[in-house]
Amino acid sequence: METVMSEAAVGYAKANGGRFVEELKALLRIPSVSTAPEHVADVRKAAEFTAEGLRAAGMENVRVIETSTEKRKGHPLVYADWLHAGANKPTVLCYGHYDVQPAEPLDEWKSPPFEPEERNGNIYARGAVDDKGQMWMHVKALESLLKAEGKLPCNIKVIVEGEEEVGGEGIAAFVREHGDVLKADAALVSDTEMFAPELPTLCVGLRGMIYTELEAKGAATDLHSGMYGGAAPNPFVALAQIIAQIKRSDGHIAIPGFYDGIEEPTKEELKAWRSLPFDEEHYRKTEVGSTELTGEMMFSVLERTWSRPTMDVHGMPGGFIGMGAKTVIPAKATAKISFRLVPGMKPDDIFAKYKKFVESIAPRGVQVSVRMIHSGEPIVVSTDNEYIRAAKKAMAEVFGKETVFVRGGGSIPIVGDFVRELGVPTVMMGFGLPDDNLHAPNEKFHLANFHRGIESIVRFFGLVGEGAT
Ligand code: BES
Ligand code: MN
Ligand code: MN
Picture 1 (cartoon, rainbow, N blue to C red):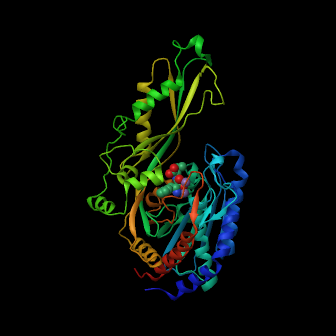
Picture 2: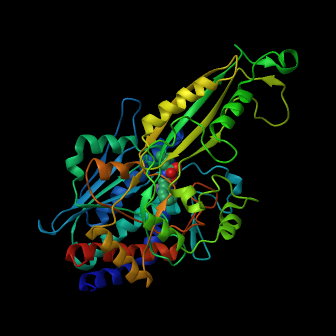
Picture 3: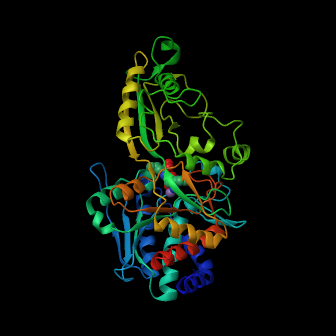
């Protein structure tokens, strides 16, 4: 059953869709790269822009909340609420992030990352889909309801963070210390993807992760590689040897106890995954673009990326990386190494096992040290609740197709805390597409999905308010 309330708001969203996109462009012009110290002020600007958007939408108690942890001053949170739907109506907590990943390598972009450009139905910019565009859908869905109807069908709280792309410590501390402020009956997260174009999708699981730095030290100082090569330890070679022992060529992680206690997907889940429209060759060619796919070949690609843990190396700072040649044996080298975790694995336990293993295999003459940069727990959400049913129905109405359930291989650290600390059923309703280039050059958001996302969210709130699921 469709509500009259949703229809007026959907009409408003359609009539104002062009303006919504222009506003999103203004947000995308702010280079809110959370990992970059030189962008601290831009990150704050994006927080203020978000707060202003929520105020203009008609939300109340809009606040920019400072965060800081023992380690560092963090990027602010943005909070807003509207709680006049009545005590008999549920409260939904909307979550998104306004920070983005670095845009480098810049010369790979067809249009500059912070100068949003529309090309064939897409908007191109860093953060277009991850997550500014999707966060803005929440703001615009709320505006559409409040302006078209003067009220919301259910109570709403909004929390938007600026540190998701660097591990989300600030929001985690806020949830621990002020859980009551965010108390809600359900959470709505739009920071995931649809499985295929036109296929409405709810994400019901995310991998966790630990992100680490592994440092190897050899000689006391950099050395001439001709004078000392053959006698002095080389920390890059040591890292290569260590990395090759952590992950075997068949994709198996050789850290003792790494796979202990892993929870497998249920038979039903695996069966549902097998019926998803997935063509491995198409995926290899169009998304990965490599000559072959790798990893644990006895598992399907979807299992390998959704329900199996893995390890990746992101970069190896150190040594000589300038143009041309320099014959040096660097005194030290670093590898940025992360592990994706699945249910049953604990970040601290995996870190301890990894540290112990690396120390035990350090090549002669090399001292290794490992440091955790950030971590987040894996999560699988329950699908047996009225909020998932409302979301499924809302999306199906908008897309005219049955909604499918998938997991995501990525991580959103705070989702685990919502479920475990706040005990709220979480709905991950995302509108990205598999070829949106998240974290890569030419990130985009398909504009039709931006508009359908707003409509789906409006209908979701309507259905939640009705309790008609
Ligand atoms: N939105 C992504 C996570 C995501 C992407 C989930 C696609 C499901 C499908 C998020 O912004 C992200 O990139 N997270 C980081 C987490 C991290 C830096 C702690 C990630 O997964 O690398
Ligand atoms: Mn994201
Ligand atoms: Mn991201």
